Amino acid sequence: MSSRLRLIDDRLPASRPEDEATQRGAEDEALDAYSTIVASVAERLLPSVASLVVRRGRRPGGAGSAVVITPDGFLLTSAHVLAGADGGEARLADGREVALEIVGRDPLSDLAVTRVAASGLPAAALGDADRLRVGQLVVAIGNPLGFSGSVTAGVVSALGRSLPTRAGSATRIVENVIQTDAALNPGNSGGALADSRGRVVGVNTAVAGLGLGLAVPINATTLRIVSALMREGRFRRAFLGIAGGVRPLPPRLAAQLGRRSAIEVTEVVEGSPAERAGLRTRDLILDVDGQMVAGVGDLQRLMVTDVIDRAVTIRVGRGGEILSLSAMPVELAA
Image 1 (tube, rainbow, N blue to C red):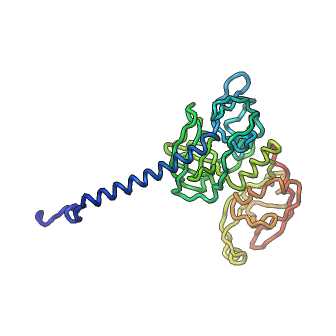
Image 2: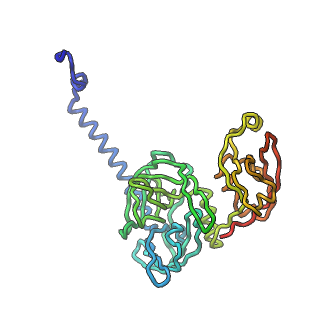
Image 3: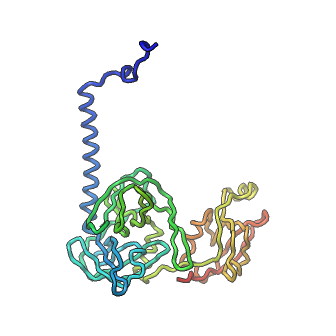
């Protein structure tokens, strides 16, 4: 019997030296291409990434990174880097140390904007994280552990992650957070996560575990927050006053509406706009202000400045019927 057994290697055709040489050549070319992309991104973005040293009262308050987003000195960073800070310094890539002014923080998105008294700065190009794909190459640039201008590379490990944030009694889920295996360490927060063309697609925000980093995406939603922080120093959100979660629609209602899910109301805050509008627990919120909502994230995206102190129509499913209610969201207290 043993004489009839053959190893797998014995059944495979022997590789020829020229084949091995071709394979090594292809691998070398792929490695060279990878290195070229990472080096190109680093060359483009390193001048736009600053190191922050913040001050909380009379004592040092920690460090982080920031990305230059305008030539006249606006820098984008993480809100938690500036939490409780009343000043500090930005160490620019050209070696200058410049006092920083905190323009605005939005803890519920973990984004913040600061400004330095400098001009002619190399502003980073901003991309669109909504166009990322799992497996795509990304490069993280920041100042981890006090080492300025550090570059690591990896891939987009996952998309659509959620990051819970809190500001006082308010909580919010930051949606579509980018997960990457590019090495992130303390001090990387506020730094750039860039695509292969050197466009900033995320702001590094957290180390969730070994080989697991998270970044707040740069997309239309977060750009609106950044713009408001630059103009007004804050981002205003609307408050409706419900808690809820995704629930599949009953078959008859799903067939009638041509969709599968809605937001089930699990709690109505006493005295809130939702209570005054007549919303009840177990109601299924179908759309708000004419916009379909299939999940909590959809509702969060609608609770912005535009609907504060304005009557909006909310369609709900209740007891198999569809009702239209009118609510007037108020500004979410900071």
